[in-house]
Image (tube, rainbow, N blue to C red; front, side, top):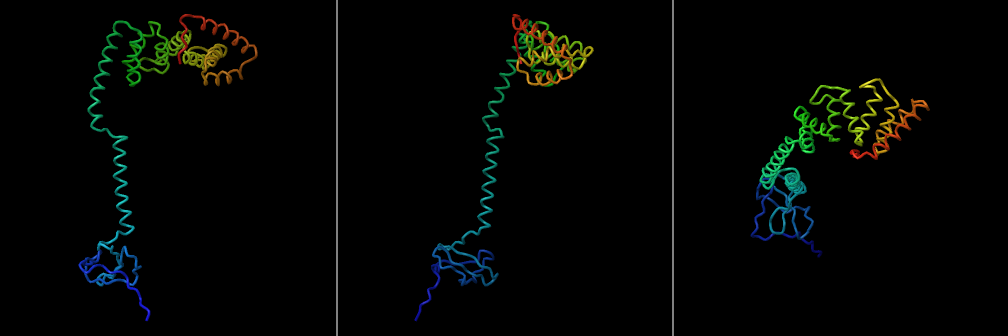
Length: 264
């Protein structure tokens, strides 16, 4: 007689309950695989199948595993967000100290600026300018520019050009850009060339525009190089020749001038 092996059963001391409805009216299902790790049962009340491990506990379904995994992922992402973007207790503790240092430095800068230090005046003006407080920035930038600070002179030219902290004044912008350009300020040279090209402060002057764009291009200014070549396309040979000769002479003066300090 062939003996049909039966599926493994749980110890008698273990009560099997349906994990869906809690009923004890269950029986072992013919779908049981015979795997010693678990047994499949069918509830007589709700007619649903479920698996029970060897220790008598229901094995999680795929859905349960996915739900638990998703919850764990949310917790991990929340932790990363707090670490990378949030401010922890250490940040909160350090911030007041950083603010105190900044405030102390600003007070010292103001004292030096009031005493006529051009660099301090420029730095104080730039701080206000960076925060878009142009009215407070303007007088300090102007004070530094009046002391011959080339970067301040360029920034003052931008203030006049765009009407930031003062009335828009193209001639004043041209004057400030010229002073800074003659000190070798690269961006001022470029802006000066554009002003002459567009004729904002005077009638358009292609040769003067070419002159300063050519010098700025030689200093590595990419936009100046592009606009110089575009300008040359609408100039005569005689105009280009004159502009190049003047460019050479002016560039030599700037290079040999003690005040020249090429700044970006």
